[in-house]
Image 1 (tube, rainbow, N blue to C red):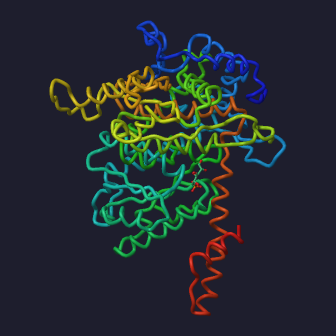
Image 2 (cartoon, protein in one colour):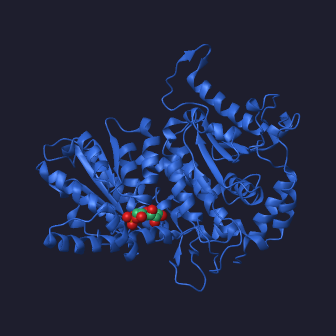
Image 3 (cartoon, rainbow, N blue to C red):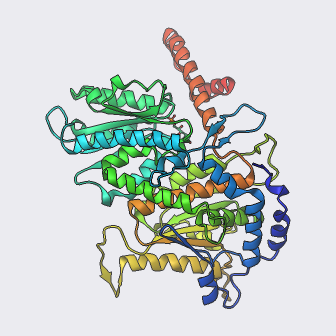
Length: 536
Ligand code: G6Q
């Protein structure tokens, strides 16, 4: 496999030339019927409508050339087959395979990385058994009642993905079941959740790949004490998901234990047991399998070498066109679905932790921009807030809209001739067009420059299957971009730094509090800051 720096790809020059005069979306009839029909890519239940990007066939051809020169499909396929792609050449680095896709490669007779899929299958079998015992009431609380709530205790990758998915799929929850999350070491995070649940009917799912994360271990103890305070036995309520051999790998402390593996990065772990236990409890085993099915469909579709037929690849390359060639610094993800309210937060981690890098695979400083700042909020709420800047600000923000033709509960109300779902979709489409075409007026206050690139990802309905697909579309988009920038999207030294610093500071705080106790005096915030600066 050849690893080539982004700025030495021959197509980069052709694209730089094309970027001098990108397609003008504000020109007369720019969004013709023909253009709207041409720039659509469909697969795994999603349509990507991208006529509102500043592209034409020449740009697409050059982006395709870039895909081929950088060997993006070859690298993606190698990743799925278990190649070690979490590495930096010549320097100490994680040196691991990247196999989150193996967790969902369960539906064909010949999985691409059989050992990893077999390991995933073993955990799924254990999960099924556990969920069956809960369903047939073999496993109940001390009063013989079924558990109705699960609290996932974890942070970062052990929280964001499962939380975003659980929130998005509430309408598909089994009767009476709910999922809650505690992540922050801020004690108020736990306090708020704990006061709202009946602990006697609650399972606590502690999730930490390393089994050493300060926030999670602290919150585990906090919840254990809360259970004990209510006279409940923690080992009858607590579940663990962790790496083999981690400090949390002690089944005697838990009602059930599940494993995740070092070849699955935290931010890519929602389809492993990190998401599986909580989502399986909430949706049932079959519901979780539907998520895996949707993700697997996209993983397969993402091997299509044609940029015009592969949604993840196309989104990756449109992102590179906007960020590296047109120079836009951020990217907004705007779901027109309240259920996806935490999805941008999950993507923010997945994308920015993966592609927020400054060295190439050979350890040299990159000479080009890598991952953009990614952010977002659900529409239409955002329209009444930050869309002002999207329409008229000096910063051009490429936008990725996400929408569904049908709402989840299928309950709706018709007001003045349209349903709420129709209003939601109409708003999405109107925003997309308005950002692209702009509006000229003699009054500068009411003028909209347009040419604000965006695309729409559209599916029928947000179900476990479509959500699995949506998740994988973005995961694979992130991988493609990282390959194209020739960076390692699969390590996270910035996060590790935070963990190390927190440990150091806390060790000093413990030592200090002993001294202060002897001297019977406290430290001012400024003194603490000064000490922290010295420690770091
Ligand atoms: C994700 C990151 C990071 C990680 C958390 C929690 O890719 O590595 O967000 O998931 O720091 O780590 P543990 O699961 O080890 O507690």
